[in-house]
Length: 339
Ligand SMILES: NC(=O)c1ccc[n+]([C@@H]2O[C@H](COP(=O)([O-])OP(=O)(O)OC[C@H]3O[C@@H](n4cnc5c(N)ncnc54)[C@H](OP(=O)(O)O)[C@@H]3O)[C@@H](O)[C@H]2O)c1
Image 1: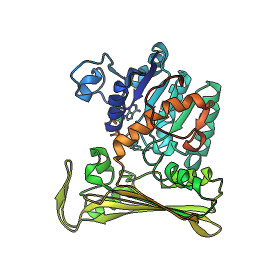
Image 2: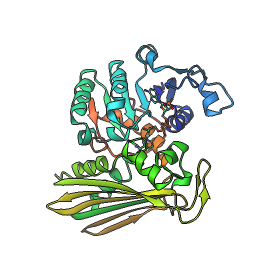
Image 3: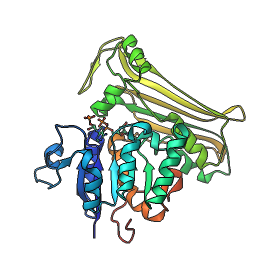
């Protein structure tokens, strides 16, 4: 028996999710949704550039409730928008159709941070319909929160945690490069950031509050910010040209204060041609330093969403966060862990 799954949102992340779900023998992709008129009606194979038809055609979200029910969908893998006030009606429709939701919406990773009222509403509704709703991804969802939390499991004391993520923005999808304003002049970048037309990274506060909650720590306050990095030489990516003096990336940060001191600090450097690594430094007993050679963020986000599917069978209904579920991991087959 395979588990019936739908994808909601077929941008680059949703397409990656769909492609990987189609490869999993224990998952049966039975429905796909997007608002884009150019995608609606197409067989997924056309969007994903697969040789063989999938038999799954992209539907309008107006058909979502009916299609989830008639296809017996158990899990919706959702990847449309970032802010919870925008995705809230989408999540509600899935819940009311009796489907569990795993979303890459950044603000859903810890919705109690920015949208406490919507979080409570979703939690109550999910319990009523006996489904689970959870937000995840590479970041927020893993690098700045779940990973450092896991690393502290070997410490008896923690005085501070510093996580750095450094990535080559040229390797990321077009929508990523556009939302970071790559190639824009400084004034244009600032103006677009100010009106919210560009967001760069969203989720510093979500990650810090999620990590603090996981460690059972109540922070005094969280501050966050981002500033553009400026190109010293011209270069180009697959999607944008970056001239000298224009934006080549961003440095973003978040700090969580405990008893007036920096307790959690996260730094993101996302820039064209930047060295790729992640580093977690824990000042504790024992002190700890962990470093990687980088994580390919787009496929990692798809993986995080798909890999949560079997974990849902281990948790009760409601709005959950990464700290509320069993140890995340990949899954090779669903076996007895049916949702
Ligand atoms: N947590 C993480 O680590 C993580 C990592 C990567 C991405 N993300 C987030 O995941 C989401 C998807 O990423 P992406 O790069 O694929 O974004 P994207 O390029 O903006 O694609 C989103 C897709 O969803 C569609 N869409 C928008 N509103 C919709 C609605 N109401 N109903 C159905 N479809 C809708 C869009 O259609 P139109 O193009 O026609 O609007 C587009 O096809 C974004 O919010 C992104 O920020 C999170």
